[in-house]
Length: 307
Image (cartoon, rainbow, N blue to C red):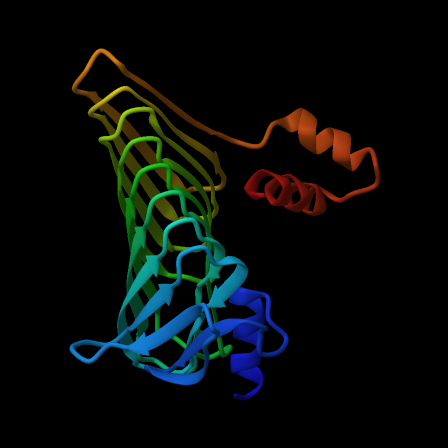
């Protein structure tokens, strides 16, 4: 890989070199590096683009890195990745995609990730999206990730997703179904600028007794960008659900938040929250009295808000 690919890899996966443990690096539509371990196997699909990641029951303290790099102008990349996490495993999965545009043709990556998390297993899933380009490049950077989560009894999953910068248009879909005692935590952060458009759609079926789901989205919309957040929690058993969208709106941006709740039993406990507003003036003043410029103060506030 060259300097462009190395930079993207660092942005989306925090890697300066090939990681320890299992990994599969996809570059411009093909696997460019792969390593498996005794407990984690990665197999190329035969019927469509993508991979199967199989994690043995009881695997703990191991990680899988599966970043995607698109640096070829006009490439439309599509992958189907399936994760099979064995009973009692406790692992971290780091995904993410970066697109570098270098011409006038649009570049895109669509990824469909499906998780089958078996009884008592725990997964931390980290996914970052990032775009950059040459100064004279006019091609758009498009990204449409879909995540499907199946949580078995007492399984747990924490999702940390972030759109760092540079994605012109995105539709981020997440669906989940939870069995007895399962727990799902989702933390999303999104930044849009210019005329970028970002849509996030979450849907969770809380089917199991005493399962729970907590979705928190924090976004910042600048300039003429547009954002739309949609979530729906379906409480179908004795369960607890919470969905929250907090947005900072700036300049001439537009933000729409539509959280929804649906209960099919009196035993479901569901809450939704949504807040959209500008940066508070007193926050800016406080930081500026410490010696920061207005722009530096804004940057500090936004950085802290998105963490």
